[in-house]
Length: 380
Image (cartoon, rainbow, N blue to C red; front, side, top):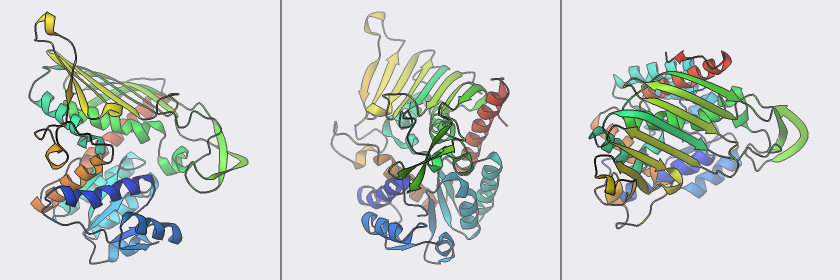
């Protein structure tokens, strides 16, 4: 695993737990974790269960005993690491968004296509696909339970940047993160709505806004826990992304991604309205799915809450008895399960790097639309 921050902890949890709850055809071995700070990455290795640590990701790619590279670094490093790993014959799991630019994502997708011809697999980590309730929502749509999809509404609301004195981290620098709320959390709702509906966005119209233009620089540390200095630096990414979109199946969607929604901590919400019903999902209540059956008698209509904890629900047979909750971290175990099973079967895991590229194209189109006065912009 290359990187060891917040996502490093989540991915480590997934690698460690998945083989203990799912009957995987291959046994993951947590061989090596890589980071720039030797002491810090050594502590991460000990804490999360990695056998060794190192400060050079190239050393990991050169080792014959390593089969898969898991990339959880900032976006500006994804392309270089992933392409090198694929060319060295390593399977790759890369956190979202796939890259910082369409050009980088295109190069990664092409490298993945070349590698696939040799049996080497690549997957991008959109883990909210693997929340049992969202996977079940996808299944209900595919089964025609809500009819023709007409409207999609999706928001991802956070407030961790609402404080104007919060320090300037890498996530607020375009050269490192690619974009702000748009790519960081907007990418999730783009992928998730396309996944659930089975449709792809074809054009968008949107605006981006940066509310706080400068923030205190960090004297030490990379995260919000670092020490802030009296000097200030420029914020070069968006704080808010608002856009509408058209899907290739005829549906129309509205999207909002913000890190300035005061009082909202991690509110990812999706509602899909169809001709014969509707579905609603809220990450802050992730063990349930709202379902509305418009074909029921008028006296029986209304959203009902489905508790997605039955053994027949996606992924749930491996966990606890009916009604017992799972959490955020379980999506990463499900990601490991699906990836390992695909590698063993010689199949392409999803979402693929090509899927990640398509999301990157949507992100770019939203940005272009904002620059040109919210004009409708086609997806490449």
